[in-house]
Length: 109
Length: 115
Image (cartoon, rainbow over all chains, first blue to last red; front, side, top):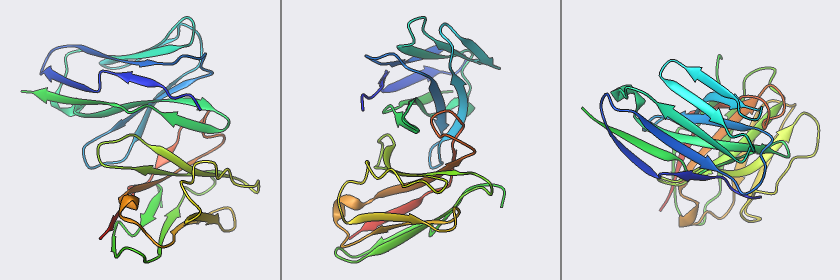
């Protein structure tokens, strides 16, 4: 099926700065999930977005689903070293998730 | 156990040999997924089991790959006549319901190296 595109592929951030990673689709999404994978670890669920324009916050992380349900974003404020890892978005369809290639985040202390 | 477990954690095998990877999902989770993750890459869907329904095998890359799930619980992924391009981390995930609507819980993975 159609993949979701994630940009940027790599994000190098100064500790304390904010950044945003994006997840884009050419088709309307029924829902989007976000996962985080720490180096050497396995993906861990962060959030699911279902409604058009939905915004959800988890501490310093803000997730948004676009009004047209074709894109999503993850914004992290005041980046910390614990934010290091790869963030994947995944679109839900036909009982499966199709994962994007991920945004790998490194943090400069 | 509290989470998804996989065994072995690491497997080194010679090209041409068969390997069997095991996944123990969270008790009560009806959906079970296998993914493959190559170094620095995203997750490639392989196969999906939901309850007693026929599995969705649409992601299996070749007929050398097969999987089964016994008793709606433990699953094994078998790769026959392994090739070097099979080297990757194989991840298993389970979910309480439909894996596209419910959170998927991942196991630690099996790192397969084919020499």
